[in-house]
Length: 374
Image (tube, rainbow, N blue to C red):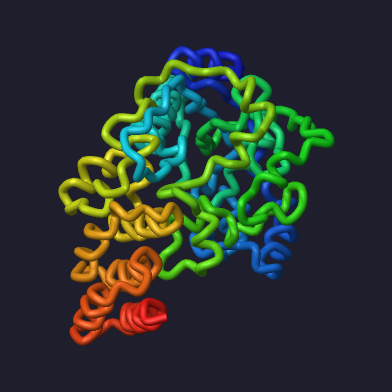
């Protein structure tokens, strides 16, 4: 006799606020071996992806005795009125509203794991939220959580694609659930709406072009891609916003995902002026803080240029003396776009260039001076 049933697990999960639960076989990822190789060969894999394909398709690397994967999903589609407090604002993806979802999901999965262990002897579990190389969306698909949209995201009938995914590896066998067939039909709104055309074709995504990745990418961003970022400071919701399933997706009451200090439309000048302490207070509690302050400020600088926001000029000038060479270089770049043929700005950048030791910053400053001299 089973120590706990799938139905009991799903019932308890619902009681602790988990919206969706499904079960998949640990072998469900093996079929993606060739797909991942081809994706790598085509250059569609980005720098934050695990390069070892076997680690991406082998749960046994994490839990050698794994016999099942329990997939969970939590909706973050909270009701919230977006307010505009200033003209100079940057956009924060819905996925980074409120408390860091990694913490929220991990807490719920650990409760679910403890419940299973209380019913069963000698059960081993490992809870995973985005902190592992496994193909999370593919696990969710095989567990029946939803189907693949043409934008590569998992879509659920009730909650749309505004769902966070997590997995529990367990050394107990459960009958796998049945994957769902796609319901996108002839709709291609997400493909048409993607600002960088990162959706190469239905279900095939070039991660290097996706703005969700671009906003966390280290270093310099190609200028034509930077223009596509618009006001985005962290993430991109465009393909989800146009999806018909999300327009009718169920709203949830989940206070932890309601924006707090970090606003959906956050003041750019405040971001540009942030100290380490202020970054920790504003961005720290959210999922957008993991790349650090410099990347967020770089994105804010780009947003100022894209919106031609003159009120950002003085804070950007101050960043010529930043401790980050990335920001020193980007501030010069921004000033060359916002201060057309301004002789005083040329002098300021020249003075910064004399003191500069970093090659990237020096290159950006030299180009900025040339542009301003025009």
